[in-house]
Structure formats: structure tokens, C-alpha cells
Amino acid sequence: MLLLQINHGKKSFGDRLLFEIEQFSIYSGERVGLIGANGTGKTTLLNIFTGYEEIDEGIIERYGEISYCRQLEEIDQTESKAYSGGEKANEKLKKAFQNRFLLSVFDEPSANLDQVHQKLLQRNLKQIESFLLVSHDRELLNEVCTRIVELREQKLFSYTGNYNAYLVQRKAEERKKEEEYEAYQKEKQRLLTIYQEKKSEAAKMRKTPKNMTPREAKVREFLNTTRSYSGKELRLNRAAEAVQKRVEHLEVKEKPKKQEVIRFNYQKTNPPKSRFLIRCEDISFSYDNKKVLDHVSFDIANRKKTALLGKNGSGKTTLLHLIFSEYEDRRNERNKKDNEKISFVSGLSIGCLEQDFKNIDRTKTVWDNAFSDAVQSRQTVFDVLAGLLFTEDALFKSAGILSGGELVKLSLAKLFVSEHNLLILDEPTNYLDLPSLTALQKMISDYQGAILFVSHDKWFIQATADAVLELENGKLTSFDGSLKAWEEEKHSHSLRKNRASSHQERIVLELQLARLNSELCQKHLSKEQKIQLEKDYQDTLVKLKEL
Image (cartoon, rainbow, N blue to C red; front, side, top):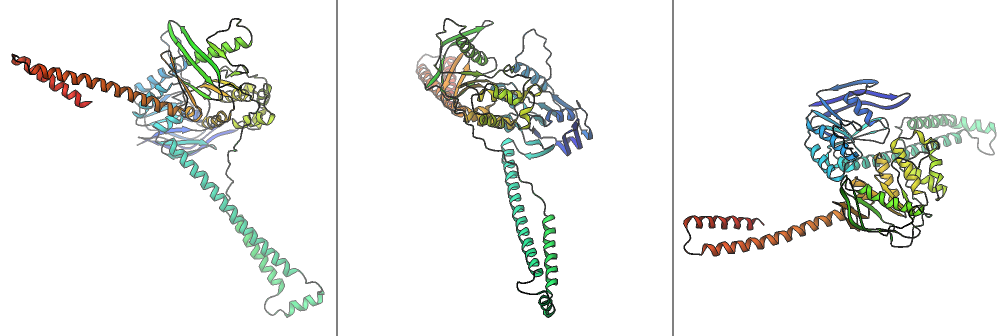
């Protein structure tokens, strides 16, 4: 059943073409993920599909009621409590899942959700028959989508399957384009070689041999009883022209654009020589009568990329703030009495990603901002900006007109080229599109200092983290390894715990069977007592077999 269709759709902002769509449809049973770089028009397209915006040209056909969970939809706060980003997202999604529509549309539904609520979102989406969602969450796209649609080059490109299937198909497309371009270049060169040979042969026909007078040349032409030299020249020129036309009629294949692989040189990061950079011992913290940190102890290792995990509201941002504020107080000599529970190694320099972008001067250009605090070379500054997908033209844009995603990238660039050798990043993946996420992953992997970061993007964490801290119910657990290894360790621990519990339960049941068997052997039991004991014995035996 057809749910939604657009024909000959076109949308522009001023003189800039946003997208031009020949035809696009969504059918019942499809779970479509819409992806694309920031600024390509994904949210605008959702607004057009759902009637919130008008299209410039084309026809939109809707064959049923559509629900729309918008990214910035306001929540009716009937209570006086302040809502966090995660709580707002949860409230918004609860409303979206309350009713069922033929087609549900979501714009960044996983934004600000912790991993527990991301799993809940995945389960809820799997219960919906048909939906269209915009997301940069690769885990979500992989788990729930049956089709990926990419908005690029002002057009929509459709791929069957989930995000992993999309990656395979895109890679195959790029390989095919490279092969077609190479074949085109090879055939073009072959024809041009033939053309040059024909033209060269024709020129020889026209050229009078050395030591031959013009009179002798005319006699040679007259005595050639088969074909005249001028005739041969004409035929060769015509053959060359025919080859040239074949070259002109070849289907032109453009050279595929390749993302340049940049190797970042952070030689002036200069991390300390010690194994650990920060040591925290027995830290406790509470607010609003809620204990957030309960006698927490941990170390931050040098050169490690450490992911701080935990549910929304578990205290991750609080912990980052405690570390950075204590460091700033020491650095600025505001704290005359050192907090003995937090110690910093000598030579440590900490930089923190500012969520309000206080480190950016909106009156300066992108380049001036990035270079203002840089200790790395000009080439490294340029490479970092290019690595975060800033074009050369964008370097001279005023920071005051940057989008949220661009501000995040500029703030990150400033940190990576600064003197700092430990970076604290609270949700660096917010506002970033898929190409920027991939770029940031490489930048973090190449970084020679240490990074402590919070993110709910499981794919991103797995690609970057080589150490894990997990905060749960005020307690902190440390693990030296990747997210996948940490999850496997927790699963093994759970299995061991369950086996131990099962073993203990088996012993209890076996003792209970022995007791019941002993009681059944007693004389002078009433009929009712014997029936009850036999029932208890059989029930216990069933439980034992189920273990």
C-alpha cells in the first residue's frame, strides 16, 4: 500500500537549490532511514512530507494520517521540575508512541538518549509497521531500518537494507564508478592514439620527400596508377575525423571524488611521561538529597581514550565538571588548599569542550579562531580543519554565522591544535552529521594525548575508546579495553553470577528433596499430610530439573 509519494519535487532557499526529486515513495511495511550531511535539507524534506512547509514545485500525495515527532518540539511542562535534554527527548517520544498512524515520521529521535533509552527506542520503533526517520545514529539505523535513503548532490539515493547494507552498496557504487572512469579513460586514450596515427600518416602523404623537386613530385603522383598520394591523405584525414567523432560521442565519466586521507601531526601535544594523569580517590557528591557519586575512586591513564558511560542523570557531566573545575582552580591558584582526593600529574594541561561555545569569538573567522590558541604548526591547523570537513572557502566565514554542528567542529579543532594534552569532551557527537562523525573518529584515534569523553553513540564509542569508566548508582567501574570487550566482560560476569546462584539454588533444592523424602518415610502420617508432602516433593523435583 502506497503511503506517501513526491513527484517532480523541488525546493530552494533563495538562489540555492536545496534538492530536486524526480520521484520518491514510501510503502506500507517500510522502515526508512533518511541520512545526509548537515545542511542538505533533511529536516526541510520531513517538514514538506508532513505539511509543515510548502514545496516550490512538484506534487506531494499522502494516503493516510501521518504523525510527526519533530526534533525541536516543545514539551508541555505541567510540573515545575526542570527537564534535562534526555528527559525532554523521553517525554517527546512517549507522546509519539501513544497513538498509531499509517506512517510515523521522526527527526533525530535518539538525540540526547542514553543507551538504556536508545534500546527502548529501538524496541518501540520495531513495533511500528511503517516509519521515516532522520538520524545520525548508526546503531539505530542498523537495528531498525529496512531501507536507507541518502540525500546528497540535491537528489535522493535509495539503498535496500540497514546501515551496514548501505555501506556495502555505497562502496560497490564507488568501486563501479572508478572502474567505469578507468575504462572510459583507457578507451579515450586508445582512440586518441589512433587519431594521432591517422593524422601523422596523412601528413606524410602531403610531405614531399627530401631531394625531390616539385616537378618530380608531380610525376610521382601521375605515375601512381592505384591511388594518388593526395587521395590517400584525404582518406586518412577522414578516418582521423571519424575517430575524433567517436571520442566526442563517448559517454563522459567524471573522475570519482575521493576523501583525502589526512595524517594529523600532533608533535607539539607533549603529553607527560607518567602512566596516569589524574588520580581520584574516595570522591562523594550529592545534590537535591541525591547521592550522585558515592566514594568513587579511579585513574585517568596517559594517552588513553576513555569513555565515561552511564544513564541520563547518573552524574557523568557532574564528574567531568568536578575534575575540570578543580584543575582550573589549581591552575589559577583559586584553591589555596588542595583537594587531596583529586591529584594531577605535573605537566598536565586540560582542555574542555565548552557546550556554550565560550571559546569561540563570533566576530572572527573560522581560521582566526582555530589559529588563535594553536601551538601546532599552521599545516596541522589547516589539516585539522580540513579533517573536520571545513572547506577552504569556509575558513574565511565568520564564526557568527556557523550552524550548531559547525560550532562543535570549530570548538573541537581549537582543542586539538592547542597546548592541551588531556581533552574532556562532553557529548562531542551532538549536532554532527555522519561524515563529521567519521572524521572525528579518525582525529581522536590519531591524537597523541589523552581524551576523557561522554557519548551515547555506541558506534562512535566502539570506534574510539580503549578504556571505559561506567557510572551506575553512584559507583564507578573501570575497565581497560574497548566497549565491546567491556560488554563481553559484563556478560561473562553475569553468567558466572547466574551459575553461582544456580549452583546455590540446586544445593538448597537437593537438601529440600532429602528432607521431604525423609518426612515421607515417617509412619503415622495422615492421608492429607502424605498427599501434601508428595505434592511438595514433585514440585521441588520439577524446579531442580529446570535448573
